[in-house]
Image (cartoon, rainbow, N blue to C red; front, side, top):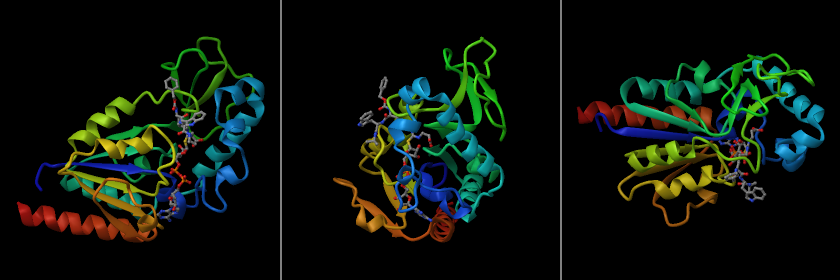
Amino acid sequence: MANIEIVVLTGAGISAESGLPTFRDSNGLWKHYRFEDIASPVAWRNHPADVLDFYNMRRRFLADVEPNEAHWAISRLQEVASVQVVTQNVDNLHERAGTKNILHLHGELTKARSSTNPNLITEIGYRDILLGEKAADGSLLRPHIVWFGEEVPFISRAIELVSRAAVFIVIGTSLQVYPAAGLLQYASKSCRIFYVDLKASLNRLPGLTAQYIDGPAATVVPALVSDLINELQQSK
Ligand code: BV8
């Protein structure tokens, strides 16, 4: 499998064992908030303070958690193969586990941007964005997050990567948010698909042949990665 392209698509489930809440599990974020009211341009226009509080709270919390064994395993795989991570997550746990080549489809908590110029992005680390704070162009500073109803700028790049992948590993996502969930349809017929989730085998991927791996990511991803690394070493 030398020099093959591996794409890893991750969702909130890969960060669950680091202590970050998912969205749609029993204690998920969308159980406490309606996403239309807190993660959309309309929410930002109508009640920016609530939106800032929501992201400020998550950003502060991110400062106090660590990558888990699933994040570290992906970094180990990247040392021996060409691995591209495409994540729906806005946390920086892949980065903090040393992984390179990460495409954030839905933005990044540790960045903020101008409300009028989406390319005017600034690194803010774990600090709050204050209500009324301005970007360099004088417009309101907003979280660098893709909200519902907003375009996903990197989706074409992600489609390109998936369509070229020889191995596609999907970890910890309920595959309910589009266009990210639609990436699976771009995997080639010869692509080996692994779907890793607490309840992977309950979420059959329509029309696709995949290997379903049930279990907590911090346990099953290291095992999958060591199998793939063994395969790589034997194929050399
Ligand atoms: C777009 C923000 C068009 C960051 C997110 C009606 C109205 C408006 C829009 C729509 C609509 N109907 C459909 C749409 C499209 C909409 C959409 O898909 N809605 C869904 C709800 C139906 N999509 C959009 O709006 C997108 N934009 O379509 O734009 C357009 C085009 C051109 C021009 C203008 C506009 C934008 C989507 C991005 C939204 N932003 N996040 C933030 O606040 O975090 S999405 C949000 O959901 C997060 O990013 C999250 O990553 C993503 C997906 O969730 P998951 O990661 O899958 O998390 P979830 O909790 O669902 O699942 C966790 C999984 O992990 C579970 O399977 C669980 O079993 C597993 N798990 C748990 N613990 C573990 C585990 N697995 C392993 N180990 C464990 N320990």
